[in-house]
Amino acid sequence: MLISSKKEIRENYFMLDAIKDLKQGLQAKNNAMIKNPHRTVIHIPTFNGSDLYMPSADVSSDIASVKEII
Image: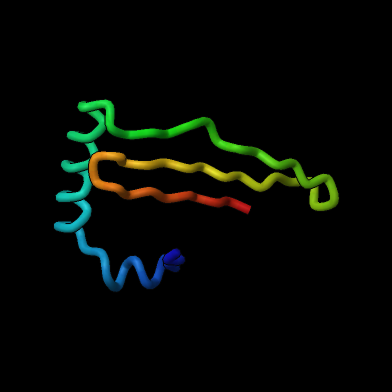
């Protein structure tokens, strides 16, 4: 598992990388190779908030990720 901060992403992931990856991702989406189930929401009443989990996978490239928002 790799956890990256905004700073680390900005220092290591450049616009040319993003454009290349976006093109590849859109091609996979056009080929129905993106799996993106509904997000999971866990309500946390103690903090009057929620924890969100948003999984996604590109099965053509064997890449998966989970975005978590607390």
